[in-house]
Amino acid sequence: MKLKTKILFDLDGTLVDSQEGITKGVQYALKKDLGIEEPDLKKLCCFIGPPLALMFKEKYQVPDEKIEPLVATYRVYYDSIGQTQCKLYPGIEELLCHLKEQGYMLGVASSKPEGNCVEILKHHGVADYFDYIVGASLGPERREKVLVLEEAFRRMNVTNRSEIVLVGDTKYDAEGAHKAGVDCVGVTYGFGTREELIAAGAVAVFDTPQEVEEYLNGTEHEHK
Image 1 (tube, helix red, strand yellow):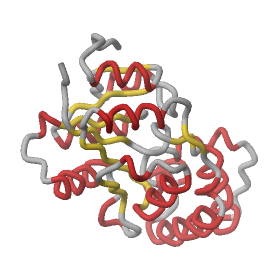
Image 2 (cartoon, helix red, strand yellow):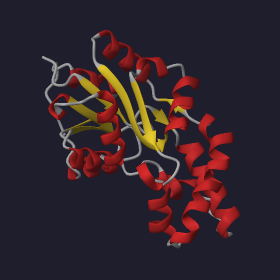
Image 3 (tube, helix red, strand yellow):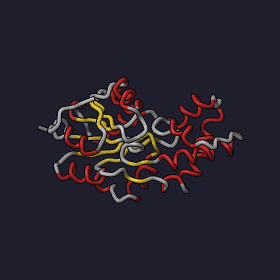
Image 4 (cartoon, helix red, strand yellow):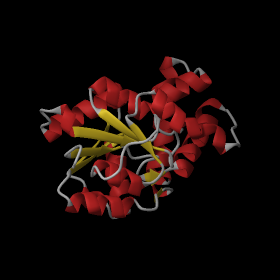
């Protein structure tokens, strides 16, 4: 028995491994605009998932007036190089193909700018699986996950939020889903942890795309 009929996916850490492009983009922006050298890219993995502006402020205490220029510098790198430095996780295309064949409405809801989302999905040949691809705005208007989700609901004409679920890999996905009044199913192969997803309210957490498919189809009991 299907639990949901409309499925939204986060992008970074859920559909694609985007660690290299994002961390190198942040590294580039920090050095160019702030003179900060950060040779250890692993220390920049915290930028994957949440809005960039939020993380620049939290991790480096960047003053408000420097946030938007810093994000713009990051975009210079990411739009030209970074968005090509990612790859689909194993099993994702099969998951999307199976879900589409079974009649689900599929969408993407990402805190990455919408244009980048479209280009990445097209690059990997999976854009056509999605009925809707919704991302953040380039400016600050629509960056938080809950705002991206609300825009996705608007485009999808969602009237019953109990029919929709978000699949994501970090606490930001689970928290955004909670604020938007929908369930979040977490995955552990991305950039978050099982513990943080559970603490943030994920209804179930799985280790592989196949397990996610089984759960969505009601053929496997949820586990955390």
